[in-house]
Image (cartoon, rainbow, N blue to C red; front, side):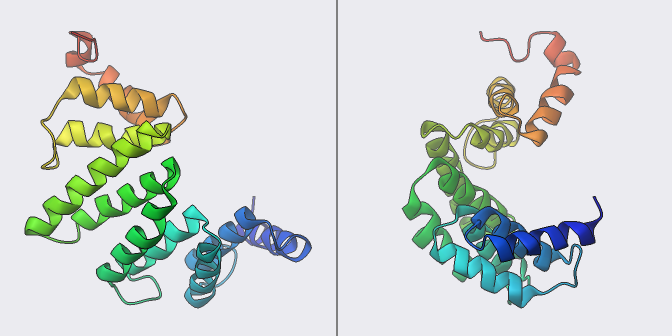
Amino acid sequence: MDPSQVFKNALEVEKTNPNDLQNRFGLACLFLYGIGTEKNGKKAFDMFSELSAKKNVSAIEALANMYIEGQYVNVNLEKAEEIIKEQLIKINSGKSLNSAGSLYYKLLFKVGGNQSTLYAHKAFDLFNKAVELGYEEANYYLGEYYLFGRNTCLIDENKAYFHYKKAALVGHEDAISKVRDIEKTQKFKQGLGVAK
């Protein structure tokens, strides 16, 4: 569908059903990235802020990400971490903890030294908690940790494959791609991914 038509459709839904939070979030994303309309960071920021006050996890994550990436606002990693702690972690759902973990994961590449290691551990713990609460998509990030270590766990390709496979089973696109890639390798053909 034409991006300008997507934007028009979202505006129409906004007019007829302003309480459709999913549509409102999508509309904010269209403003942020200028899809079907001109970029409008202020409008996106205001909409994400409004949705965050309603505990919309996707909007809270988007708002924190704006501070991490410097989208419309200045880069402010402290503000991003405040949003993570005060909003996402306090909601304490699988989705919110996964979002918090993914933001800490992103932060670990923005800082160095001990802070990077601290963020890596926080993200790892949050992904594990999200999985414990039944949010299977968090397994993708656990797969990343076990594949690359990330200063938190020993590299274990069997565990990486296990977690990617669990995330792939719930439709996580990147996990599906990782599983396909792993299953093409000689290591897999020789027993990687098989419980020992």
